[in-house]
Amino acid sequence: MIQVRAQISPRWLNAALMKLFRLAFIASLAAPLPALAVLPLQPWLDTALPGASVRLPPGTYAGPAVISRPLTLDGDGKEMTAGPA
Image (cartoon, rainbow, N blue to C red; front, side, top):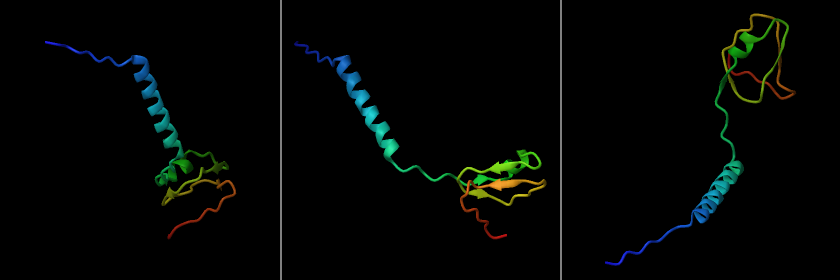
C-alpha cells in the first residue's frame, strides 16, 4: 500500500484566509448601508431636562410623542416633518 500525504503550508492558508477576509471587509464597506429602523421619539423627550435642546440624529422617528415640559427639538438644520395627527 502506498500512502501519499499532501500538506498545505499553514503560511499559505493563513495568507489566503486573510486576503479573503480583507476582500469581504472592503466589500461590506462599499455596500450601501441599510436604512435605520424607525426609532421611538418618546425616550428622547422623557430623558430631557426642562428647557433642554434635544438634538436628534438623522432618522425616522415613531410617534405619537407627548412633550410635557418646555423643550427645543433640533434637527441640525435639516427638515423636520410630522405625519398625520
